[in-house]
Image (cartoon, rainbow, N blue to C red; front, side, top):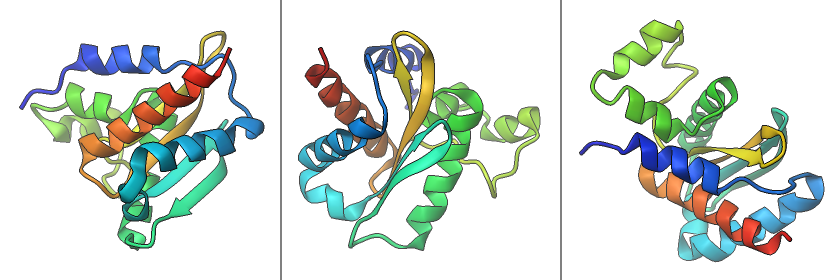
Length: 155
């Protein structure tokens, strides 16, 4: 199944916020819990602002494996300022090219869904929201929907 790059870019643009700082982290977590519902225990969640970890959640049904995926997805978002699913879409035909072209290691980077940039309308990407524990597209969708939810609360 081909992943639609334009759809993902559209989601990244749609999810831009007017502001996001430490005061907003709790609101994002509440949105993740609300939207994730029963899946919240199945996921690990990492929120970063300016590459600084400002929140981490390890669901009761997660393992260290999820932490490893979080790290790899976060590295992709931090390096490319795009969602990890977008990078997966670009290299869908030949995932090895991602690692070869960028000189990156599979140990540190994973092009699977779940890493989503946190961007501001005024300045661009300022952080990331990483989800791991569901399918990669479900991880991506949870992150996207949570950002859309807190966006709707901003004036």
